[in-house]
Amino acid sequence: MKLTAIISVIIIALTQSGCRRVEPGSVAAPQPTKGVPMSYEVEKSEQQWREDLTRDQYNVLREGGTEKPFTGKYYKFFEDGVYKCGACGEELFYSKDKFDSGCGWPAFAQPTQRENIEERIDKSHGMVRTEIRCAKCGSHLGHVFTDGPAPTGLRYCVNSAALEFNAMIGTEKKEEK
Ligand SMILES: [Zn+2]
Image 1 (cartoon, rainbow, N blue to C red):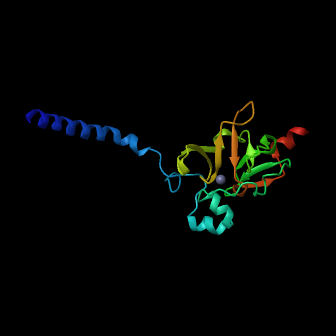
Image 2: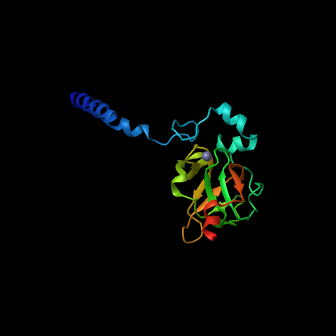
Image 3: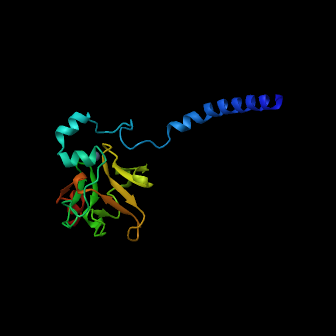
């Protein structure tokens, strides 16, 4: 009996001290993708986003929705240009990196710049995937998978509704001259 009491005291002591030590780390534990407090260069109230975006854009970009496969406007679209974030206009993907993945959504082998994309672990729908967001405004874009073509081996699977295509590529056009 005495031993049990001592053990319980030890366990309580360990648990409590352990809790305190674990606490700072537990704050960073994966959270639902929506509503995670973070600061971005472009920030608006949800009301403002709702006013600035179409219903489809808002559903994907701000609510993390996914458009139906094979339906997006850029799925079978291969013009030369740049794809910008539909919410803030940041240049995210070049057409030269777009490929036909057959998955039903626009797919890119790499972003314009790695730092333009924010990655988060997404454990929704019983899967563990890597969610991709615009690093400038935090809007949801899609997911990145490791079954892409060489040399990157990556497949940035992006919703058409999250993108805005622009036929002008400033940097590449300038280099031609
Ligand atoms: Zn953005």
